Length: 360
Image (cartoon, rainbow, N blue to C red; front, side, top):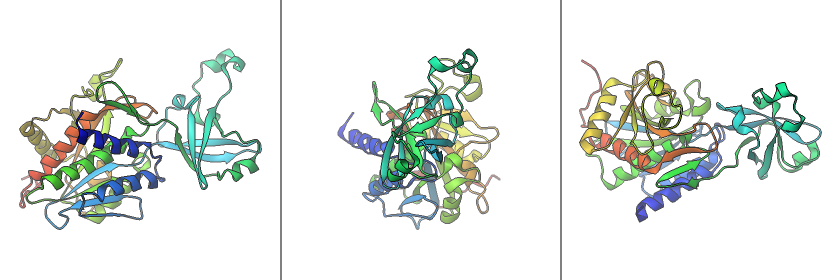
């Protein structure tokens, strides 16, 4: 890996290690904006927690590049008299993943470490051992012996937390981390912006957005308000999708997508057919390997919150193959992130001042 790639990997690691569950994204958003200042014409944030970085902002067509910066997490729902914390999930959890994990609670006086507690297997009845551990039957133990001691630690009901799993480099260019879904999307859109600063688009302006609250954004999350604010002529969303190069993968359901096989282009539902076709054409011209993902009902990404804003936004989705989604050890290939950024930048450069996505 060359020096520039190592530099980008270092930034990605710093972005991934900052805790930022949906609704509490301020820390990774600050890291993202601090990096964006290095090459963007302008950076800013909004009341919804979205972060923006623009190059050639006044030019048309205006392209919105969106990747959500939030992650799934936990929220304290109750502290009992003995100092044990009870919780609910922020976003979609497989509660089995939580058993035995270490956690970080984002308290008002700083981060507080803890562990997820559960009745030991030795004390379970045979029928209990066969049951799935539901999140509301688990608790967090921060070592406190009373509710008052928990308060002294700066923890109160409503505080968020994440699993205490950091960035890890694996064999080759593969990486594992807690928040790959979808902080890699926020990374990719900023990388695309950096590439466009080095080799500008002749006509289009572009705004990269690290969107908020996608994991709980049943009404569109931060992406909806960001699109309303920007009034883009076209939008590209970067998220993760299921890698199917693992045992028992259901390729018939979600397609064939491999780590290191390149980004994934979606077709269907919120995806505009002309945007998808242009992405595929650009990928072929640039020599970027891609696979295709069918989205017959919804994309389950920020695209679902963008494409119907105002009079409609022609929207595309580019995804990163991801193993072990919604776990503390998600895995992607760094080369897929690089190629996704190159694809987005090439798409923006391909646009003319009179490019139209109206289907005749």
